[in-house]
Image (cartoon, helix red, strand yellow):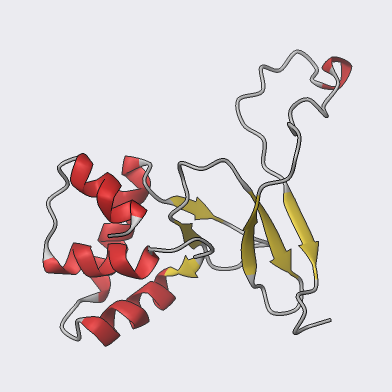
Length: 136
């Protein structure tokens, strides 16, 4: 069983066949699918699944904090099931492939106190950009 499915079961989330297939589609380490990609993969497994069901389920998963919405360069939002593991993203500027990366160090520590302008920093987002092996 995937980590996402285990977390959802642990929360007592009602697991309908439709919700289960959406969660199964999102299972994996480097998954960053758009809602339409989730719909296409879910429909391949469960042809009767409705677009609204997929979109509503994604919204619920985001609201629960079990899946993160990732917006990259104004493109369609992507859904990342690794919401509980601190990581950054590596994005291909050619094909828009996204990979999770866990660089050494603390990105917050790289921001000197003088550059925080009195802010209490709650979150740091770093996106690495480049070309994947196929696009290079």
